Structure formats: C-alpha cells, structure tokens
Amino acid sequence: MAQVLVCGAAIVTLSMGIRHGFGLWLQPITQDQGWTRENFAFALAIQNLAWGVAGIFAGMLADRFGAFRVIVAGAVLYALGLVGMAYSPTPLLFALSAGVMIGVAQAGTTYAVIYGVIGRNVAPEKRSNAMGIAAAAGSFGQFLMVPTEGFLISTLGWQLALVLLGMAALLIVPLAWGLREPGFAGNAAPARQQTIAQALAEALKYPSFQLLMLGYFVCGFQVVFIGVHMPSYLRDHGLTPQVASYSLALIGLFNVFGTYIAGALGQKLAKRKILAFIYFARTVVIALFLLLPLTPMSVYIFSAVMGLLWLSTVPVTNAMVAQIFGIQHLSMLGGFVFFAHQIGSFLGVWLGGFLYDRTGSYDVVWGITIALGVLAGLLNLPIKETAIARLSPSPAH
Image 1: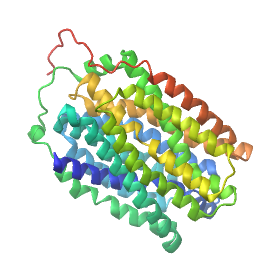
Image 2 (image 1 turned 90 degrees about the vertical axis):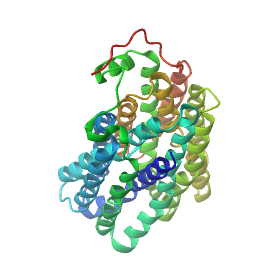
Image 3 (image 1 turned 90 degrees about the horizontal axis):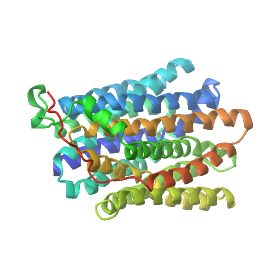
Image 4 (image 1 turned 45 degrees about the vertical axis):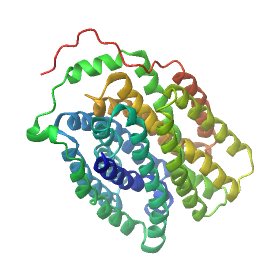
C-alpha cells in the first residue's frame, strides 16, 4: 500500500503540477504569436475535453491490463505535447499539441487511472483517506510547480520553459514501475462479475450517478475557468504577474489540506453532504471576492480559502463511485464521471476567452460560475451513496 501511495502521489504531483500553471502562458504566448485569448482558451478547452474523452478509455485499459502501461504511454505523450506546444506556429497546431496530445496524456497520468490502482490495493475503510492523500499530492504539485513555471518563463522564456517541463514529465515513467499490479500479469485481468458494458449500463441508468456527474460538471467549469483566466483577470486589474503566480500557488498549497481533510471526512460523514458543502462554500467565496475591493491581500485570502475547496471534490467523488458500484470497473466509471467534469472544464475555459473577447471583461462568466455553484450544491443532496443492490449479476468473460 505504501509503495502504491508514494508512487501514485508522485505521478499526480508531476502531472497535475505541470498543468496547473498553463494559465501563466496565456499572455506570453498570445502576445508573442499575435493570437487572441480565445485562441489560447480554445486549445486548453480542447485539452480538457480530450482528457475527459480519453479518460474513459484510459480507465478501461487500466482496469483490463493494469495501470503501468497506460501511465508510461501517457508520460511519453505528455512530453511530446509540451514540446509541440512550445513550437506550434499556428492556433490549429497549438490546439493539437496543447489540446489533444496533452489532454490524452493527462487521461493516462492522473486521477482516474491512479485511483483505480488505489481502489484495488487499499481496504474500503481506508480508501477515501488514501484517495485524499493522492489528491493532496496533486495539490502540492500545484504549489511546487506554478512558482517554478513562473520563474522558468521569466528567466528562460516561455518556449524553453515548456521544453524543460516536457523533460520533467518523463520522470513519470520510472515512477509508474511502482504501480505494476501482479494480478494483471500476462494481460489477464482478475475475474469480474460484470462486463464493461454491463457496468456502464448499470451506472448510467442510476439516478445518483447522473447527479454525481452533473455536480462534477460544475466543479470542472469553476476550477478550470479560475485556474486559466485568473492570472489575466488580475493583470487586467493592474496587479503584477507575481501576484497571479502566488495566487495559483496558494490555491495549490491550501488544496493540500483541503483534499486531505475531505478524504478523511469521507470516512466518517455522508459524502453527498461534504460535496454539497464544498459547492455552496465556493459560491459564497467567489461572490465575496467579486464584491470586495481587489487588492493583493484580497487575492491571497481568496486563493487560500478557495484552495481548501479546490479539488477536495475529487477524493470524495471517486470514493463514492467505489462505494456505490465497487472496485471492479472503478477506473472506467471514475473516467466517465470525470468526462462530465471535463465538459464543464471545456465550457469554463472557452467561455472565459470567448466572452472576454466580446465583452471586454470576465463579469458574465463569474456570474455563471456563482449560479452553477448553487445548482451543484442542490444536486448533490439527494444522492444515495449506499452500495447498489444487484440481483444476480451474470459472470463476465
């Protein structure tokens, strides 16, 4: 268990840490290339959508053949995508590298695949807590990597900074070795009670699964809009790039605590109530941030409190999927829930750029973010998180 947690956490630290700093590249790339913010935002929107779509299949492959092969392939693709992002001469090629390639890479190196390994190797009474530790590692990656990325951009330029990150992504390959699962040796997955089709049909028809997906859609919209557009929003209001970099780093630092606490509470409290609280609290925090005067201190306070709520939905959501449906198809079902998250991410990041270019501000998108937070809180309250009742499942072959 310790090896799985350490290697899984380190992989999430690198993969999530790199992606959390992409907002720092918005202004350098658009200014140097003569592109609009919508050009950049569309590429990252494609990235989130590609991550969501590929996550379903990455989960299926990890459930069938084990996580090791999936993670290695994702790491190599991540490195190639970052180099391609650095040297793409047109918005189309930028969307293919920063969007499609990196999105698919993230599907193989982040939560759905890593949580599948954790779910299969950690006892149910410790599962939510273990997932919280892995999510906290991803948050630490944001705290560690975002200031590093800001430093690399300011000292080496944005292109070389991306190449160095590509080299860092390859460190995921040796870490994946620690997540090999003996039960998948020789391409033979452990015996299952359900086929992939049976498990997916069962989940998609279950109302609580649908509500969980809708809530996670909102999570994606909120965090990716803020993560990508926050640096430019602050620059537009006269604050320095350092404030933006520190802001994202603080979100990452406090999310270490938020995700760990959420995972630990998930062992003791109703998970649907934890999720509802997170969404309602985000709504209040965002509203206060917009109503109060914008200063470096207000940004730092917002970032710290928002950090506590940032990815704290992740361990609770995935632990709930395991609790309701079991662990046999956890990576695949987790990938499907995450697909809803990434549709929200696509809309959040793209609408941020689209509406900014047309209105000259982010006000409309901030308003949408607040309204969706209220909706997500309400959607999570009626979820039934007890194990689903199965009559007599047909054995899968």
